[in-house]
Structure formats: structure tokens, C-alpha cells
Length: 488
Image (cartoon, rainbow, N blue to C red; front, side, top):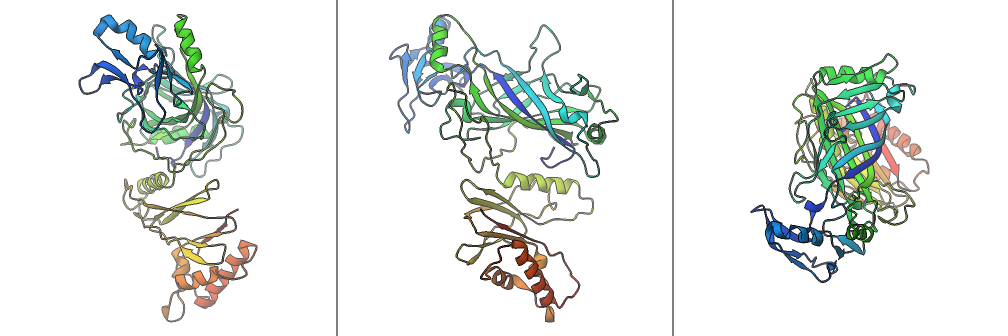
């Protein structure tokens, strides 16, 4: 399922996660991953670039001599002890992180469909029951087993980290009608873990971490789409799934805030109250068609590197819950080009190709990120009237070769009042007398005009007239497309 494939159901809501975090200990050297044995002498790890991590309770016990099962109880007490460590809840934290006694349950709570993107030609009315439906992952149907899906963490340094085991996907209308029932699901691997999603400068501990999960249900008797006549969106999805290989779901858990402060959790442990401390975060995802040949999940997966961090205001974990509890993350331009290339290549029976300039502008940092699929380089008109060419290395044209990921990108700053011009090669290759082309020099000179019109459309209309004059109104041999943008 490409990010750009259709049809697609987009949803968002709350993420409930209650994993036991003891095996995610990265504050003490407790386990040898090579021998798969506990370390004989467990030692608190110090961060050379950060503050000292000090064991407060048990007091001054920076090490623990593990001697097998006979010392298991004392070892648990040590792992549940309190640290002075501003990186995990500040100023305190547990060696076993924030949830020693989690039961591993996870859910999509209060999760509803936010939008539906149908295939071309399909109109989805606002009354479509899918637009107000609830999306959920369901646990095992047996009352003797877990009622919620289960989230399990593996070695946090491995390629395969968190995994979710669920029985199925369910989409339910407001009247209780089950619109989509899909089971059994594949195991959902977190195919990318990011510690810089929604990076608030004041974020502490797990709040800055996100995980992207992917799962699927192949076509079969367990996959049912109930498509009533008043739901063009479901009729479209059912038809697309029938010609595909099943249903796929991809979602992100992010902005996690655990509910009990580390010192309060430690006091509960000391009083013999071994409670869990789940985190409540946000989820965002989509449901679409599993295409033939696609992976049911993505164990290590393609790592979607977060290119640009966007700070935002948010109250710290375990503090007063005020202000916005959400934020934006910019995945950058490269993953979009990869998915767009694959989408074009998969739906290209005539073996044609497309060129593209793809830009992402971050208004907070004033940075522009650009990647190119064989497209002419953009032009920037600076505040002083000078014009520069943004030399973007050309990646492969779209649709030529599926799977290509070689899309270099460049970054630059654009300030208020400055202009960005994107154009097709039909502009610079417009033929004049003696087949001389309009060329990039004339285009640059036109953009350097002084004074520049306040209305951008006046300039584009003026340029189009110049091209017509240059070509002496000969029929166009190629498209002439311009996009002129001004930064504010």
C-alpha cells in the first residue's frame, strides 16, 4: 500500500499502550545479548555527555551482583528502584523505565475515520456511513486469552523492535453495524522507531518516541466488507480489495505520556502496590488495499528518516496536562518520491515516465527541502532582486524503475518576500526563430524584473506573453507550466 494509493481510509485517535518495559533497560548493563545471560555484576551506565545517573533507592547502590534465582527478589527491588535521571521523567526515573508491571495490552481508543480518499470518478457524499465509523484492533475472541491486542518489546537496539499481536481489524458504523471485519491479522512489526517525532525541546523520556506499525489480512473468508448501497466509499474499497490481495493497515503511535510520575510510582512499589503505568498517546493511520507481492508487514522495513524537527509547545509528562497534546512531523521529501515512483511504475501499462520537483517548506525554520525526479532546477528570487538556481541533483524519473530510492535532496533558506519558481522544460525549450530555445537565461532575466509585480499572476501572464512573442505564436510542442510562490 503506497501512501498515495487509492482507495484509502484515514483515521486518528488515542493510543493506549501498557507494555512491560523492564527488558528495555538502557540505564544499567543487566543482560549480555551475545550469551543471552544476565550480567554477573549489573552496573548503572553513565552518559558521558549528560548528567550523572545516580541510584537514590536503594541508596548508593550503583551496581548489583546477580547470583541467579536466589537473588531474583533483590534484583527486582533494585530494578524498581529510583534514579536521579532527568532523561526519563525528570528529575527521577526507574531503571526499568516507566512501566515495570505492564500487562502488554494495547488499543486504538476513540479512533474514528477522518477522511476517505476514493479512486478517481468515485464521489463520497458527506452522509457515507464510513466517514463517521470507529476503527479498532481486536484481541483474541477466546475469553481465556487476552481481550486486547498485545504489544511486546524486543531488544530496543535490534532492527525488529516493538510488535503488536492482534486478532483482527474492525470498522464499525455509529449504529453498531460492522462495516469491515478482517482477521486474522499478520503480526504488526514496528518497522520504524523514531526518537525525534514531534520533538518538543522540553520533552522528557518516552514522550518524544514514535513507532510506525504495519499489518495486513490476505483475502479469504475472514475478510468481509459490508458495503451498503449508501456507501460509495465501501463499495469502492470492496471492489479494489477484490482485485487486490487483501487489506493493509499502517499506523503511527506518537506523543506518548505516561500517567504516573516516577517518584509516585516508586512510592507505590515501596508500599507493595505493584501497579501498571500505561501511556496514553495519539495514533494516526490508514487502511487500504494490499497489492499482490507486497509484504504483510515490514520487519526491519524501509526506515523513514525524520528529516526536519518541528518544535511545539506541550506540557511535560507527569505534569499539568494543559496546552496542545499534538504536533507535526515532517517526513521530508524522499519517502514521498519513493512512494510516488512506485505508484507510477505499478500503474503504467504504456511504460511512460514523469518528471517531478517536490518541495517541502518549513515556516518555522524557513527552510526549503527539494528533491528532483529528472525535473528542471527551481529558481529563487532573493530579497535583493538577484536570482539563483537551486542546483538539485536529478534522481530517476518517476515510473522508469520501481524500487529506486536514489532521490538526493538539497536544503536552503527562504525568507519573507522571496520567491520560488517551479517550471516545466516546455518553458525553457520553447522554440523560436532558427529553432533557438527560450532558454534558462531569458527565464532568469524575466524573474529579475524590477520592480516586481505585487500580484504574482501578473508576472506569470507577462512571461507567457514573452514566450508567445519569442515563439512567434507557433503551436506549442510541449506543456508550459509555471508555479510561482512567495514566502511570508
